[in-house]
Amino acid sequence: MRREGGAAEAQRGRQHEPLRTEFEFELPRGFVDEAGTVHRHGAMRLATARDELLPLRDIRVRENPAYLSVVLLGRVITRLGTLPSVHDGTVENMFASDLAFLQDFYRQINAEGHTRAAVACPHCEESFEVELAGSRLGES
Image 1 (cartoon, helix red, strand yellow):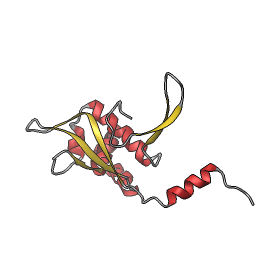
Image 2: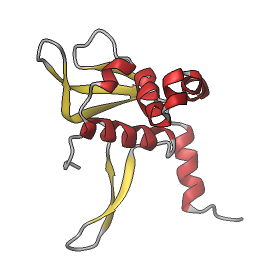
Image 3: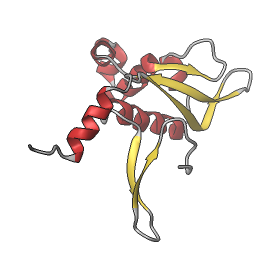
Image 4: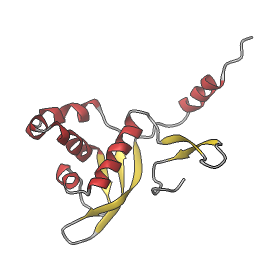
């Protein structure tokens, strides 16, 4: 009888977990609305193929490809603080550090399929995983 490796066992364990499609985050600075309220806590859903294809038709994206991430994030951020809705205009008015955070968060949940990261302690060099979703910067 052949014994399966750890990767196969881990895969079987993941098959029983429900698919997580929305991930919470906290912006490093926060979006400031017209009334001066700072919104930091939000959620982002997994992107669909449609989410990635439709912005390519947007004239702003055709004129400036860097605008793609703004339009895309406006489609997948499901909530931010107490704002009634989030759209590309919201993302366009975020601080650059928050935009960079959201771009990285998008890559983590969509390209890698999870929000865990393998890290090593700088002092003892022991390896472990940290959960990035929903945590504040600098926390594990």
